[in-house]
Amino acid sequence: MAINTFASSDHVGRILVTWTEFGTTSASPIWRSYSDDHGVTWSAPSAVHSSATSAQGSQPMFLPDGRVAIVYWNFAGSGFGGGDDATELEEVDMVVSNDGGASYASPTLVTTVARYNQPSIRTGVFLPSATTDRSTGAIYVVYQAFDAAGNPRILFTKSTNTGATWTAPIAVTGQSRGREFSIPRFRLRPTGKRSPFPFMISATAAATRCCAICISLSLLMAVRPGSQTFA
Image 1 (cartoon, rainbow, N blue to C red):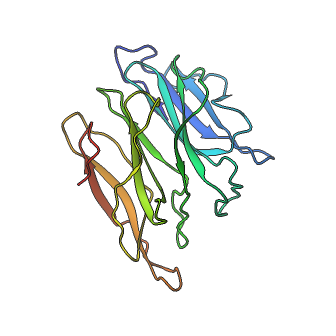
Image 2 (cartoon, one colour):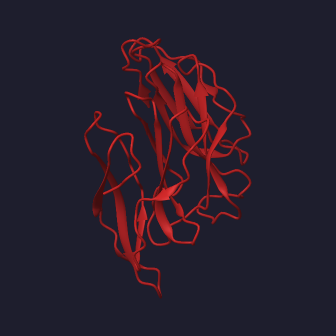
């Protein structure tokens, strides 16, 4: 869910809700509905992309100019079926609305991803986290996946032009033997302040892949708005 709190933009106060619609086929598109009267009435639900899309983990956000961006995980042709491992690369995609969330342009690619499914505990394997800089409109995305070397990491990318281009993903967690990282969440504080970046860390026994530490040991990473440097 997202609420337009940008006072000088169109559709200020609009509440936008997105969800995944499951049916009797392999498709699972992202749908949306919005309210302009504090939730008393809602618009007719509508898919934000092709109804044949297989997606989850939608992250809607209002941008400073009143436009809407929705970041989500696209399973593409990976053959996802519940807890199955991916058979090929998947995607983090984004759609943008120029009319406050009523209609959307065609999806664009944020990044391809090699899905990492933590074997011992249930995590947000296909739940990216996205936020926007309230001053500049830059969009930040974090997600869990394998890096190019096959290590499970939390990865970060950003766009300063509403998704026209994205920075090459960088790992914000180091490589640590016996530790795996998952469920990143990211929100920006006002400009000039460091933003906390919580995620889960779990330790596994290499031989049995059995979870040894599965409580919420949240580490706080921090990034300064406008930068790509993590503490």
